[in-house]
Structures are given as structure tokens and as C-alpha cells.
Length: 224
Image (tube, rainbow, N blue to C red; front, side, top):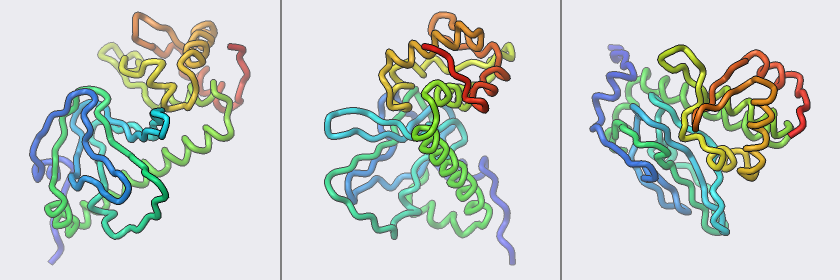
């Protein structure tokens, strides 16, 4: 007998709703120790980050609503060689709500092929995003990287404008790009001068998405 298909909404019902304040750690891995909870993000933004020996934060991936957060239960058999202390954490960058599913219960849910398909789909999407970010950071000009980041993260507001969440400060973007926040400020000023974006208070608004896409595809050079 075939198992019933489970949707993401139905999967959420197997978890308990929890809230996180900005700066809270949802899950972390230090050397070979890691937390075992599995989350489905309902609202807010989380980030996969690490802290270097000298205290510098690096951000690799941002999670948005309806993303799975934490795959430690899936990786319990994976053996990784650790040379020195490595800390990776998923941090709430804004106030968040999520559905928490304990590891044992999550393993039982993997009996549903539809759950496996949901998980594999998100894992594949995240892997593709990480590969693109790595390739871009090694091969593309910083301004192209910034445009990619902005277009990846913007959402439509109530009036249909493409806007960047105000939590994405210059400092936050700098952590993701691996540059100084002053460099981000200069690039933003250059994009504004080219009338691709506007800034009202702390809100970045996309004025010309097509022009930004063209800058990416043609790697057009703009002084900043």
C-alpha cells in the first residue's frame, strides 16, 4: 500500500511552534557536536554563518520563510575530519517563528517519499545557491556580486515595488560578500547614481531591475 503524500503545510503540523529573537541561535555545530532539532521557518530571516578565530563573521546562506533549517538528523552518519575548532551556526537575523520537529520524529517522517522529495528539493536549491555564491565571489567583480545579492533577496511590498529588507544593512551585506562595509556603501551610491536603485531612509528600492540584470550579464564596469 502506498503512503499518502504529505505537503509542507502538513509537515508543519508535526512540529511545535517556537519563536526566536534577533541574534538567537537555532542550531549550531562545534567540531563533532551539533544540535539535533529540525525547523521549518514560518516568518523572519535566518542565516548560516561561521565565526573565524579573529572574530570575523562570514555568512554563507540566508533562509527565508518556508525553508527547512537544520539538517543534522540527515547527516548523522557523515564523517568529517576536523582540524581545529570550527563553528557553524544558523542565527535568527530578525525575529522569527518556526515549527520545530525533534530528530527522532523527523527520522520517522522520512518514511514518507513526499517528505524526502521536499527535503531533497530544498537541499538542492541551497547547494546551487552556495555554489553560485562561491563561483561569484571568486570570479566576478564586487559590483556584479552585489547586484546578484540584491536581486536574490528583494521581495515585493504591498505596492508592488521590489524592496530589500531593512535588516540587510551595509555591514550585513559586507559579511556575506567578504568586503568592508565602506565598499558596500560606495557601490550602493554608484548604483543609485546609475538610477538602478533608490534609498528612502534604510529602505533600498529597485528602480530598474532589467538594468541591474544587464550589468550582471555583461559585467559592465562602473566606477565607485
